[in-house]
Image 1 (cartoon, helix red, strand yellow):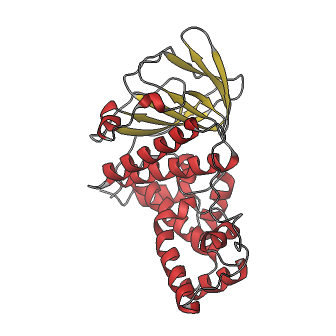
Image 2 (tube, one colour):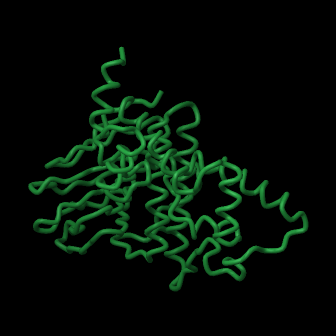
Image 3 (tube, one colour):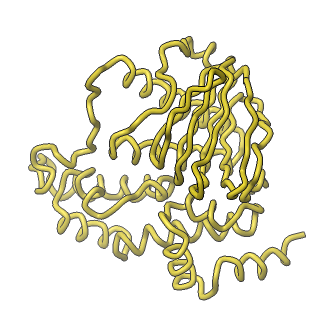
Length: 304
C-alpha cells in the first residue's frame, strides 16, 4: 500500500526536511502569493527544479540569481541562501535533498557539481522532469527497495550534472529522434519475431514508466520503427491504441494515489504524467465517470 506522504499544499513558508533512512528526500512545494523564506544553511546538498513560476536564488552576500520554469538550482552543503518568488509569479518547486553519506558511499565529490542556477536545454528539462516524477513515484511506493531505487536515480542525476560541468559543450542526448533510420523500420535478422518481442518488452516496461511517456512519435523512435508500424504492433500486443493504454495506466495510478494518500489533485496529476490540471480532470472523468475529488470522497469512506 502506498504510504501517506507530506501533503504538497500551497504554502507560505518553507517545509521542514524529514529524511528517510537512505538519506534522500523528495518534496513538492507549491508556493502561495505571500510565500517567504529566511536565509538558511544546510549540511546537505539541495537540488531544486522549478516546475513553474519565476524567482531568485539569493546568496548571503546579496547576489541574486534569476530563475524561471525549467531551471535547476544546485545548492551545495553549508551555503547560506534563500529563495524568493518573483512578484505575482509564485513558484512550484521540486526539492531533492541529499545527505552527505549518500555522496560518501558513492565516492562522489560534491565539489565537482555545478552550482547556482542552471539553464537547461529543452531535452535536459524533459529528462529532469522525468527523473523528478520517477523519484516521486518510487518514494510514494515505499517498500524494501524504495531506498535503493531513489538513491540510484539520485546518483544518476548527479553524475549527469557533473558531466555538464566538465564539458563546455555537453552532448545532447536524443533517444533515437535524430538517429539514422529513426523514422523508418530497420532491417533485423529475425524480422517480425524480433519486432513483436521488442514491442512486448516495451509494453511491459511501460507499466512502470507510463508517467515518462511523451508522444507516439517519441515512442516509435525509441524502438527505431515507423509510427505506422509502431501503431500496428502496439495494438496487436495490447488490443488498444498507445494513447488509450497510457491514459489508462496513468488514471489507474491516480485512482490509487487519490485513495491511499492525502496528496493534492495537482501533485497527483503531475506525478502521473499530466502536464496540466484541466487535461487530467477531463481524462479522469472520461475514464472513471466522475471527477478526481468525487472518486476520493466516495472511496476514502471505504477505508478503515
